[in-house]
Amino acid sequence: MKKSIFGSILAGFMAISAMGQVSNTLSPYSQFGIGVLSDQSLSFGRGMAGLSIGVRDSKHPNVMNPASYSAVDSLTMIFDIGLSGQITNFKEGDVKKNAKTADFDYAVASFRLLKKVGASFGVIPYSNIGYNFYNAEWIGSHESDYFGGISDNYYNNTYKGSGGFSQAFVGLGWEFAKGLSVGANMSYFWGKYEKTVTSVFSDSYANTLTRTYSANVNSWKLDLGAQWSADITKNDQLTLGAIVGFGHKLGADARMSITNANSTTSVSSTTTDSVANGLSLPYSFGFGASLVHKKSLTIGADYQLQKWASLDFPMINNTTKHYEATSGILCDRHKFTVGFDWIPDAMNRKFLKRVHYRMGASYATPYYKIGTQDGPKELTLSAGFGIPIVNTWNNRTSLNISAQWVHNSAKDLLTENTFRINIGLTFNERWFAKWKVD
Image 1 (cartoon, one colour):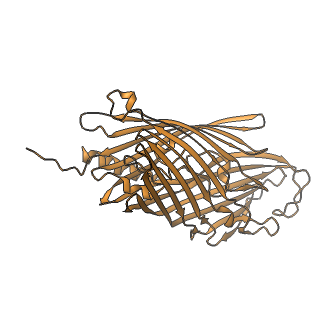
Image 2 (image 1 turned 180 degrees about the vertical axis):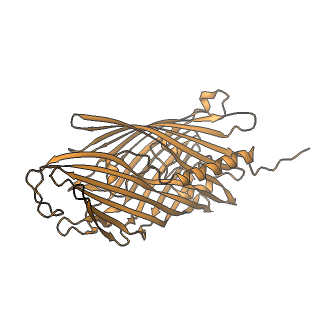
Image 3 (image 1 turned 90 degrees about the horizontal axis):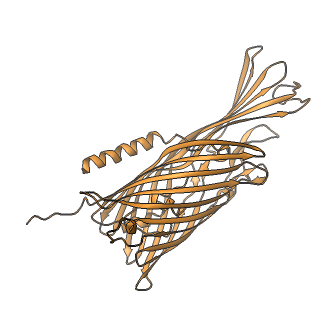
């Protein structure tokens, strides 16, 4: 049975790695920056809108704060696999459209490595890019900078993009003093994207202008965490957590090519430009706290800050027409999260008494600007269940199911409403127990 489960988990890791470039979004907003940032919490945290930093749980891996790995029981091997599906409604003015996507999200394992030292490894997403839309605009008599004085009446722009970024990590958590733990995740950070803007002009010369933006990243990512946990009363345990993510250049060139094609003369020309080492990850910080009452009710809150505003991002200079690192394109991202988890009675024989009930909410500001204004703000409401799976050989595995409503909006821009279902299966196996035979 152990071999079968381990084989399934290993296949899951391989599938995640192979699908690391598959996008789980159709949002036009994913054309900005490095895409739509992913919720990096796992299945049990998603029912609480991603609450994680101050959460310490021996039965579920918590990759958001690697210090939590030290809480893993010495007799168990934990595997967590997650997938999600979503329906998004896009609204702009009186126009509404719906879109559906689904993806295999993550695969993570966690176990006790040494006394008071826990370890974890896995693959989780970082961001997603995926969109395909167009617009038409009347421009009247226009002298094009690209076509040398051609008069146009209108043009159609088609925008397409795909790709994203993922991280394969190995982490350790060490409880070096009673109640005080530190941890680190070291990740291989990789991914690529391609974004195209195709402009078809209505002049008699049938000109088509295609701009292609692309990058291919192979780099690293380092995240540190700390947790302090103590009994503050006979029935209450308080945990405080903090995380730090190190920002750095990703060592990848951001490229742009412009192709000018004329279908009448069958003549085309291509120019290229690039920004050396043009992409970066931001420094990030986070703080969280949770309170566990009678090992039944957990309530908590998180705050995260990502320092995107200090980073340049490659853009076309409208004056020089060169592709260059530009400041003021990105802005700092703040995220606030609250949530709770309640299990009525873990030892009760009644099934519903042993189910975890979860709810949460989060609010996040954008990390990019659209023109001169900030991008959409994000509001998330979630609810979920942790359902114990009991059979003849295992009563520790759980099925975590949650539903999320995500609202993205900005003044005079597109509004998105997403309904998402997250499903995670957490195997909690007693692999390291020593059995005695009388």
